[in-house]
Image (cartoon, rainbow, N blue to C red; front, side, top):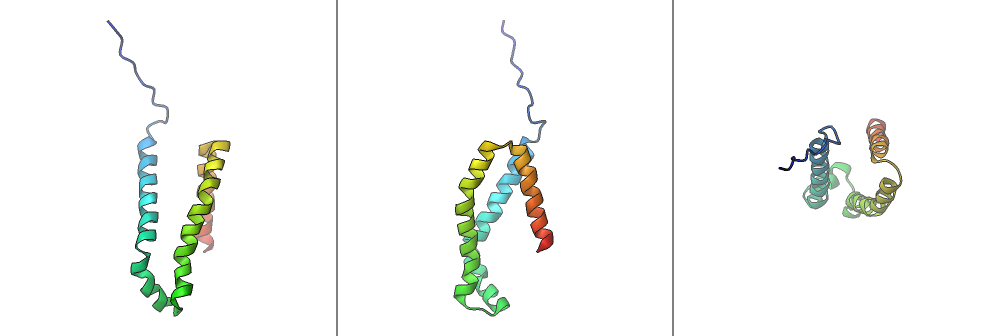
Length: 99
């Protein structure tokens, strides 16, 4: 008779919360990228600028995601993920309060 194995709960039960938050983050970023054309005319009217200058918003978002993804991969392989998450959370929240 074999004894059933019990898997230890390594993360304390937070894996689903992390999974949900990352899913929502990727959903929001993807929606902003894909639907920028819908709000582009309103941005032009709000800032009273031409199409070129207002389309730079989407361009910078796309380029920053493309350029910083390899950097994020390198950093996550080099240092513990918990520390990286805390530091990046402080950076993002500080940026929100500054802007």
